[in-house]
Structures are given as C-alpha cells and as structure tokens.
Image: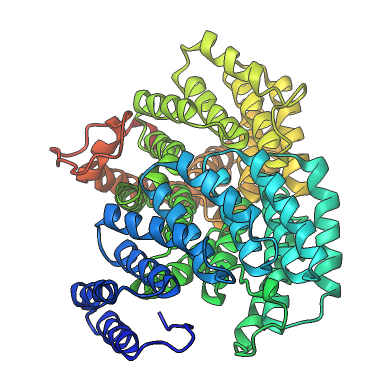
Length: 598
C-alpha cells in the first residue's frame, strides 16, 4: 500500500502509515485500517491521492471483508478517476483487475468482460499490465468453458510478448494455449505448438528459476498428453526429465533481481506448487501402469506437502490438486482390497467439494464414477448402474465418458440379463471400428470387455481373439493390470476347454503380476484357478498351497467388505442427485451380498 505520490502531504503519509500498521497487525485490524483510509477523504485530496485511496479501500474490503458492495463502489471510483489522471497506469489497471475479479465472484461475468476488454485496449503501452489483463480475460473465458475465445486471447498475448521482446512471457502464453488445446483435444494444433515452445524454452537465456519453471510447464503438458493417450511406457523419458527438472528447481535459490523487461514479471506457479504437481503426474502414471505401491508412496508425499501449504496459502489450485490425488488413490485402494479406506477418502472428496461449488461442478462426474467403482467392489450392481448413469449425465469429457461406459458394460455383463442395454453400449465403444477416443489404454480395455462378454456367452475362440488383442496392446505400453486381467481370463478359458498346461502358462504369470501390483481380485481369481488346475494335474502339495492362498485372500476381502459396508459413508451409494450430502447417517451393518467374494 506504499504511496508513489509526488510531494505528499504529511497528514496523508501519517494516515497511510497507520492504515498499513493496522492492516499488517497480527491479527489484522481491518476496521481501523479502513477508518484511517476513509479519513483521507476529509482533507479533499488531489485526484491522484483520491484514486489511490479508493483502490486501497476497495482492495482491503475485497480481500479482508464480506462487504463486496462497498468494495465495488470504491473500486469503480478508483477506475473512473484514474482514467482522468495522466501516467497513472498502476492504479488504473489494478483497479480494473480487482474490480473484474469482484464481478466474477458476484457472478456478474458480463460486467467483468467489457471492463477487462477496455483495460486491455488502453494498456498497450504498459507491457506488464497488458499481458496480465490478457491472461486474466483468457482465464475468465476458460472458466466459462469458452476455450476458443481463451485460445485467441493467448495467441494475441504471445504475439504482443514477441513484439515487446519478452520470449519468456511469449512461452508462457503459448504453453497456456497448448494446455487449452489439449483440453479441447485439438491434437493437430498441439504438436506444432509444443515443438515451437520447446525451441523457445531451450533458447531462452534468463533467470534460471524462470527457465526451469518453463521447462516444468512444457514437460507437464507433454506427460499429461501421453497419459491422456494411455501411453504409460512411451511417457517414461518425459516423466524422468520432469522429475530431474523439479529436483534442479528445488536446489536453486529465488533470485531477488527483477527482470529488466517489465513484461517478464510473471511466474507460472510457485516452486512448492510445482513440486506437488510433479508428484501428482507421477501418481497418475503409477496408477495407469499398475505400480500401486509407488502411487501410494507419492500420494502420501504430495498430501503431506499440500497440508503444509494449505496452512499458509488458500489458493484454490491446492484443493484441486488434493481432489485429483484422492481420486487416483481411491482407485488404487479399490484394486488393492482396501475398500473401507477408499470409501472414507470418497467422503473426504465430498467434503472438499462442499466447500467449493466450482470444484464440485468440475469433479461431480468423477465422484459418481468412483462411487460406481466402489459399488462394483462390494457387489451392489444396481447402485453401480445408478452411479455410472449419473456420471454419464454430468460429463462432457470424452475419455471419462468412455471409461464410464466401459465400466457400466462390465456391470451389465455381470448382471447377465441386460442384453439390449449392453449391446447398445458396446456399439459405442467398438475397439475395431470408430473408437470414440485416441486412448491406447481405453481401447485395450474395450477389447477386454468384449473378451469378458464372449467368455460368459461360451464363445471361447472369439474371447481368445479379443483377449490376445488386449494382451498385445497392454504389453506394448506396460499396462500391468490389463495384462494380469487378460492372462487370468485366458487361463480360465483354457481350463474350461480342458487345456490345463496352457491354462497354467497363463495363470502363473497372472498371479505373479497381480502380486506385484498388487491386485487383490486377480490374486483371488488366480489362486482359485491354481487350486483347481493343480488338483486336476495331480499336484497335491501345490493344490493345497493354492487353496490356502485363496482362503487368505477371501478372508481379507471379506473382512474389508464388512468393514466398508458398516461405515456410515456406505450410504453415499444412494446419492445420485444434487450436491454431496452434508451428513451421512449410520446404518445397521452391511446389506450387500458377499457371494461374489466367496
């Protein structure tokens, strides 16, 4: 709140000093700070002081109180008066920036847009503010899901940054545009853009932290692009580079020297946020690849770091990181046979979404999908169907839609009496023809679902064809869970056909892989097959060992099943409409069938 006013009056400096003292007190004394600033107007100050004081009052009221109407009144006066004062850019554009934030908070987006457009129009001689306001308007369009307008603005920003000689900020604009093009699935435009960004980042010589942060941004986009495409083996070199990059950043000290070009005064993310983001993409990779213990390790590290950051920083991106981490670890828990823990973490996601309507809007479909997966794990198929149907209604994301449809198809296959609905779904995710997304992983899963259906229908040769296709694809990209599931199902088919040797060749590696992941359901299935196989082959000792393993897995899953269904959070399986329920009533023990586990 320091003043730049020429020859300021003593009374003004005294009031400003008092206001700043009260604002920075611990705890802040905002009411007294506001009184001191309001007292400035009693002296009938010149326009420069009047405009700056309105800005200071508006900013304090906006950031520290709920009196948004009064904050708006002061900010509007600051914006109006400052436009009449020559060479008063900082006050003028800061007032426009904060006022548009306030409009967005009040859902007055149609007031924020023209304000920002006007500020952008008159700020072309002020590089820092021109770039900042372009970023702000692009973000506003992004929040409204108008990615085309946002991309156009980022393109304008990149060209402006080039003209004013800021290759660093040009890279920031282009990388931000690349991120939105990835969200829009405009892959044809993404590849040349990322190639250009890579060249700019490598050639730029400047502050080492800024250079490394650009590299992190660039590599995060590359890694998420690979992961979206389900290519968990191809992504490994990029992911390794990213992890090395974040280690390099953590050893660098923040340079206090300000860039000579005012257009360079931007940071993509604080260092600590970048660390959490790298943990997050590592967790995403580990989960897709089926390294679930590694996913657990990095999730624990990231959540611990997030808890520390959230004590000092209320940035909404931290809650988003937390929700995405929890979404991934919940899926891991369901695979490793920790349903009760997964359910409590689903409830934690619900609580985070209750605190932020925007977070809930962005993650509602994922939340219902997780509940659907939980319902499958406890054999509540009707609830699973309801959860997946709700999720389909809420998502416009093509990959998530395909993932949900694949899981819903598995529910219909298990129920055995939903042929019409099942065939309708399978037509929409046909891996041989017009598959809806480019994801390698989801296409491999679609072949598996076809194989599963053919197995249940007794069409074993057809099932083998589909499962071999899954195996070929999953081996190509190290998709360990799909490999394990395909091997055990092929083993089951060969066992039914009486080819015990071939069955054993499938089930033994399936068991080894499932133990490494670890995937509790595949271990249960494999141990049951190994018991029957060894009995048929006359291997009494091995049959007894396999029977003991099967008994142990059954007991673990049964105890976890009872624990999960006894939790009050289990009632979340009935929630299919509106925001997450605030309180979850306890129920009298489990009500679901345990037959599928025995």
